[in-house]
Image 1 (cartoon, rainbow, N blue to C red):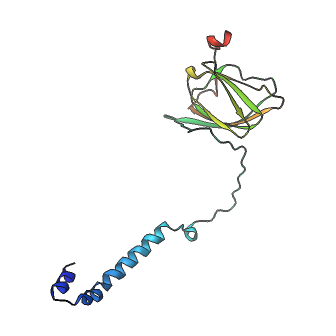
Image 2: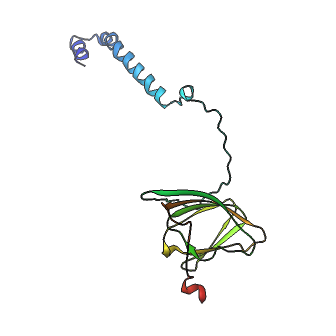
Image 3: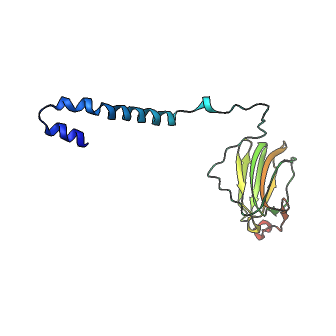
Length: 171
């Protein structure tokens, strides 16, 4: 900046400042080029995988935001659950959250407040933890309901705890 000011003060030779800034222009060009490279995907630098395969067992979309929390040591368990037509899980709750994907059929859940939620194949849901979130899952359809469930439980917890139905379930 000081050199530009000197040249400007020297007189009407405005063209004289351009060669002087050419070094700064080059520096700006180099800086812009480096910045551009930083945002371009670096596939050439990626490490290719080998000997790894994966199979999607189930895929579902949630109707809203999924919020998952776990504190302390956590057992992560993934399992398949099949509910036969006319079958039910019985009233229960979980000591940790779980994420479920309905692979086939439609699961009908009655929640602690006796509200009913139906989740068809291709949808997913989160069940919150704790006794105040007791629920029952039923298959009211004619084909088996197949669920893929990931449990996030405090270490050593059972997958579920039996629960009495809420008062509204008897009314």
